[in-house]
Amino acid sequence: MGEPRATVVAAVQRQLTAIGCGPIEIDGVFGAQTSSAVRLFQTRYDLGVDGVVGSRTWLRLFRQTAPVVTEPPTSLAAQTLEIAASQRHVRERASNRGPEVDEYVRTIGLDPAGQHAWCVAYVHWCFAQAADALGVSNPCLKIPGVLRHWAKVDPRRRIASAAAFDDPFLVRPGAMFIIDHGHGLGHAGFVTAVTDGEIETLEGNTNRGGSREGDGVYAKRRTFESINVGFIDYAL
Image 1 (spheres, one colour):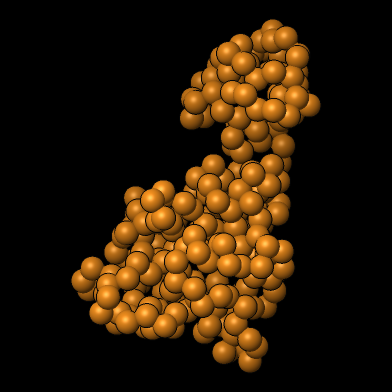
Image 2 (image 1 turned 180 degrees about the vertical axis):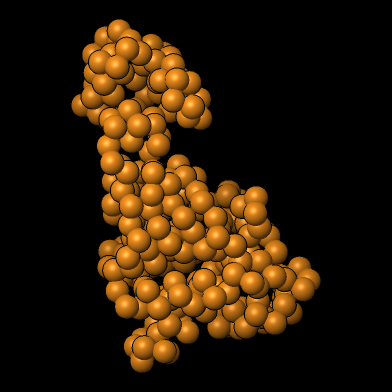
């Protein structure tokens, strides 16, 4: 509701009308009538019914072939993801502690005894291991805080959430996703693939439910809408 880009809204209205979810006035204004038509479309196609044209709704609405990205853009990204996947067995022994977790935390200059959240530490450790194996410099910033990491990284490496939502092809395997949970708290992890308007991930300090304070390293699947800050692509 209230989307300001009239040409985008008009395209949605035109398509909804064409497939029998209207008629809708093609006026470029995303109001109650358009929202109702989107909900009808989502109900028919077994999508989450929220009246929002998210990435999955957009792909189904326009019958596009979903982007599928499986190849990392560089050897460093590929090596980093291979190392990241090798850690899927890691689980904490106590809150934010464990042999592997402690090693991650030390690589970003923190004392594990402080029981720090370690999602960014896991990302940095994987990059560091890959860079050492390839004999190259580690491009990943040595900054522990998720949101501070985003703020300090070279803007040319950033892909804002809105840009990624509009064009999922911008996001490549090996990119780092950034989520803001509010109150200065965030969560981060790796993108391993992009498919059907969603991203597949590897992430530390989470659990099967997707918590930012979980117990280990897990492979997960997230929507583009859930990545509310953006992505950092250290291969850019």
